[in-house]
Length: 446
Image 1 (cartoon, rainbow, N blue to C red):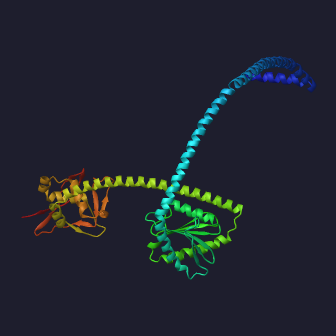
Image 2: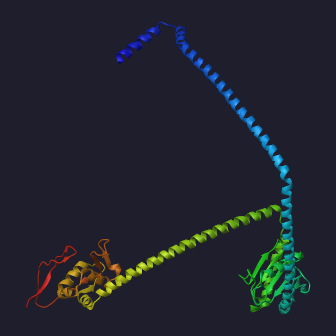
Image 3: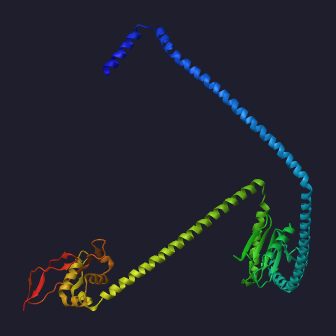
């Protein structure tokens, strides 16, 4: 195959070697002319087919558009006829509904008039019933206000008989104050706050209003003895709670006056323009967004804290059960036999001394065979007893299994010394948790 391919390539080169570039171009052009002619013919056929398809589509949609236009014209004529026929009936229904609602409005207006009359009567009665309390409160406040007698330009003007002026106007050289004293047995209600707010707005020349509750607190403004509310950029209301309950009420009024004096300096220096107001509003909105975010975080923290508390409670219950079980085991193992044996055989040693629980068990079992058999003393009971005699810091676990043997620091076994005793080595095999322990036994000769 390679030879045939090489021969073909060689023959092609030989054929082209004797031809000029023009001859080669003409040859290629003659060979491709038929292909070009076929392609041009295909393009002409496709163009004709495209034109025919466009004509069909145009004819089809033109007919549909004309049909839709005719339907629209028919529908429009039907709507005009329907409107002309039903205009009178619709107007009659509208007139009936209007008459019905006119009657309802008249009835509601009558009810409102009766409610206003009843409300005015109640106001008159309440004013009569509270007039005595008001006079007592005004008299008390006027006595407290005598503390300002040494203030420059001070004057107190009684305004309780004039509507919308409060109980008193306190005149000072720097500024004036609208004061309203309340002698209630319960909290001062919200309507009294609204009343003094309206009175202050009405008196534009006054910058401060004092709502003084002599014996009770003021509703929604009782979180502190003295609270402030700005109703606009130049007027502020001061709420004073339980004034008579203070040791020196006059001193409290002086403190309020000095505070208002400092606030009045700010009012004098205030020159707001639109840009500053816009900035303040934006800061306020951003601050409120931060407060909302903080509140949301606090709610999430409280939820997490409650979940944690529940988990801690569950863990406490489980630990309590474990401690009770361990206590029962310890109590069961803590018998006088162990105490006596521990005192006779164990003594404290330096920190480098280590004794295994297996050695202790072997010695105890060897010396108390009968007691071990009769009292059914197991290795686990013996290890629990050891844990009650030494601190937990002295116990060294050999592995993570709590039931396995362990080592104890800072203790050692006493050496038994008796007369006419000769040590004879002997192997004793003690089977404990699949461990074999070799040790020396002391034998007494008679």
